[in-house]
Length: 148
View 1 (cartoon, rainbow, N blue to C red):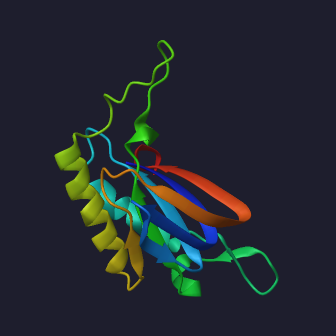
View 2: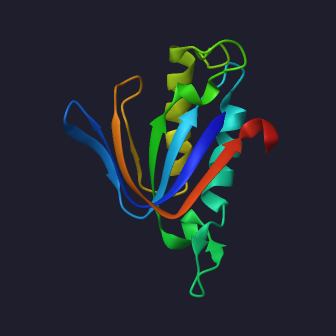
């Protein structure tokens, strides 16, 4: 499972001209589900994300977690995080999970975050989405469950 985290002061996702999810201060999480991922990776990744100390304290140092600041999460499924561009010029996505598996794990991921008491908004799985965000810092962090 792969996640691209962006620390935001606000973020929203729009589908067909309608905002379907929005948050204030917190994290935009672009989530890719791999072919070999399971609920084990969901728990590991969710735990890492909510406890990652990437928000500023009173001195401006990255010392606070999402839980510490009472932040929110906007989770958006993004299979393109599994793009393989080693051959040719068109990406291959064979390492991404099939849609039915990916959607189930994406839903489980959102539930795992919500279990920590965090507000979790989301996009539409498989939908064509537009994301609007204000990245703070900017802080952008890449996580791969295979490396945790």
